[in-house]
Image 1 (cartoon, rainbow, N blue to C red):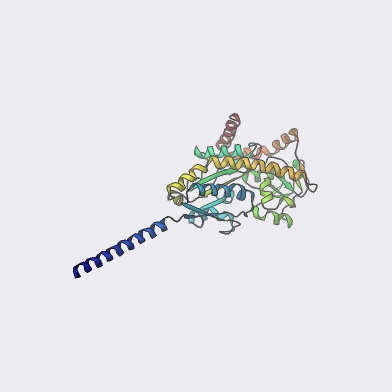
Image 2: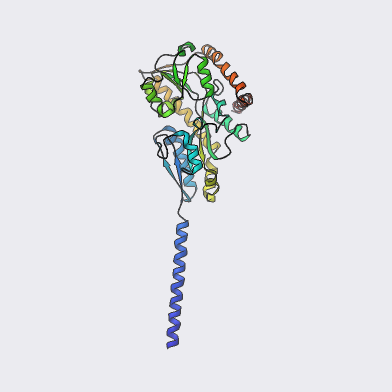
Length: 346
């Protein structure tokens, strides 16, 4: 009897040990099954058009397709830093895993982006964005190798938004304007104006304080940063574009679970660029129409003969840029050639 009792005791202890081990492994399995948290950061407010209509749906599609392996948390309105020039560094240093990057605010990082500032080249963000992505894939544009870029986009063509009427080039002489890039600065100086370096979030304040009397930017940015309501005159001159992007920490991307990486691969790149561009074209068309129908605003679209005169005054600055930039001619020739190919394939 004593022997049987001892055996039962040993058996009971073994069962207890096995149960403890099972609970341990189940607990650790549960821990490992928790989704990986990824932080997305942007200086733009949550209601900003690109945040609400492009970035948020994209991140949600990726999260859903990843099968519960990741959760993407959005930090908007500068929660992870109010200075847009620090966002790429924030992605590199792990302050955020994914960042909305305004490329022009990253000094020296994207030395060839200036080419999209050229006026009278691209007609819309779709052909400009596709051309830029092709140039990056071919190694023509530098600065894109240290991060994983989920999307690289061109804005719509910039136009003139001012507190006074602008119908001819001479109207800009002696005026201070906020602009977006190096070629645009050179063009504006040729037109007799003074470019002022101001970040997009400070455009409305600068207009209201009289620091500047106009802004050269796209309709979306004017609306997002509440500068449109302060500029009652709008002139549709294609002043070129700038580049924005979604950058992800490369180390984080490479360490993603297979399901998550497959989800990003499915939605990033061309699918995101095309979706963004098509939505933006519609967005800008609607904003332009709303502004035209607003009696407080005045929208001026020059005739083709007038546009020819604007181009004649603006293009010499582009040609000077091609001689000053060490790769300027190659960049401009390639950009124009890629856009021509895109138009041919429509």
